[in-house]
Amino acid sequence: MVRVVVVGCGGIGSRHVQGAAKCPEVSQIDCVEISEDNISLSKSRLKEIDHDKKVNFYRQITDLTGNVDVCIIATPSGVRKKVLLDVLEQVTVRSFILEKIVFQEEEEFELIIETLASRGIKCWVNCYSRAEERYKYIKDNISKNEILKMEAAYPNPPNFNLASSAIHSIDLFCYFRDNYQLDLDLSGLEDTLISSKHVGYSEFRGTIKAKNNLGDSLVIMPAPVDSLTYTIRSEDTEYVCSENKDYFTLNSGTPKAVIESKFLWQNSLTNLYINDIVNNNKCALPTLEESFKIHRVMFESIRKHFGIKRVNIT
Image (cartoon, rainbow, N blue to C red; front, side, top):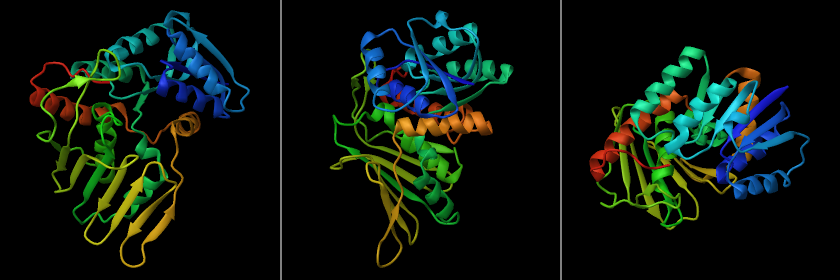
């Protein structure tokens, strides 16, 4: 009998609810959400699939009791630390999955990492690319001895939220090499923060560059594409992956190879996460500790570029 709790059931949270309902191991899903619109959204997405799960909706974390196998926190970043600590006050949790941007300050990471470690609780961050089979294939097949050049082309603004989504590309870059020695160059960003579609949070636009101590490089840039598209190059090999296509291409000569690889959307990925955690006590996602290494570099670079004290993105 596996129990899942989802706190925050908006756009992404409702997909987590849907994914949990698709998971055969799950018997009960408890959702905490204060917005009636988000509750309605989650219920409508549950109707899109066949499931036999018991799904409860609560307005307060204090309504929760008992033991929880997987708790997914999909609230905005500004309240996530408090939400997580409030959950721990109410229930016994085996593992967490947190949305990104996870927190807004390094001290929040340090507190939560220490708190979870003291209780033996595992925690992962939803940088989903690591769970996609196409990227596992590329990681296994790129040469470890050649310089890697990676481009992430994202749809031209305002159709893409760079502030909240850049971490996916940076995490994938780190994943390919298992290397977190990052240097970020934000000089290609516009100088002024703008308002995010998430009320009370900020967004930015432009180009981000990254490199590691091996000489590998990453460029995240706007382009006339309809979905996030990666080009990953070594000396004589090039992979191109678009995140709305169920295949990717390999260019290492003539002819170009087309490799089938279904792109999994969030509800399918959440199903896989829960299955792996419950059955194998592991998850393909980066751990909270790994993600902190990336968040730390991002926070330092963002504060320096914009001259701000707190990174108010979600």
